[in-house]
Image 1 (cartoon, rainbow, N blue to C red):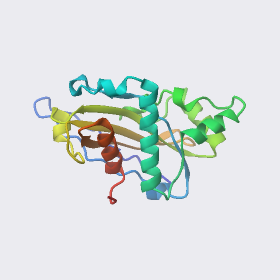
Image 2: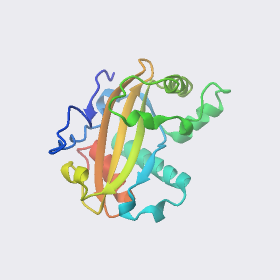
Image 3: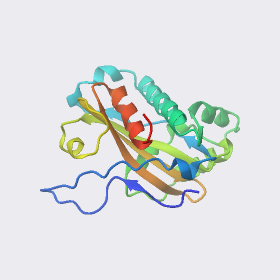
Image 4: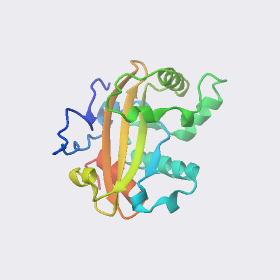
Length: 213
């Protein structure tokens, strides 16, 4: 069982003249979740810094969210097979069969979880996730609470531990929550760099699941 909060972002007071370097990525606690059915929530907040000039690749927001969801799901399934990931398609089927008991996971305000100040799941999100967990036969969930692409040479990205290299850095905030306790039990920001958004995202996911090629 996951019982402790592990934060890979935020923390402490900052010196405006010399801001602290972002903390290294904390690996997803796959061993603690082994054998569990874990809801893999669809992303709802995906955005790129205009300085990257990648906006042309994100003309269709729904397609961007879908590709992000598919990539994260495929990589986690491949790299952490000890966890039974309940991916978007299965979550949506469970919702359809729930006779209105659970809501659409793609419409839940998951981006609120990106703040490292959020330890308790806020209402009404807490109730929504509890209902979704019940119909999907899960207790825990993992939310890609935010995905932001920034130029690699920006101050924050340059100070961070980043997997790979390239013009843009994907900053992927990952949160694991316990629907029974209503708490966040893990949070980190995984970073990966690449010359296109999808290479950067793949490297960010790999940073959160280290020890493999």
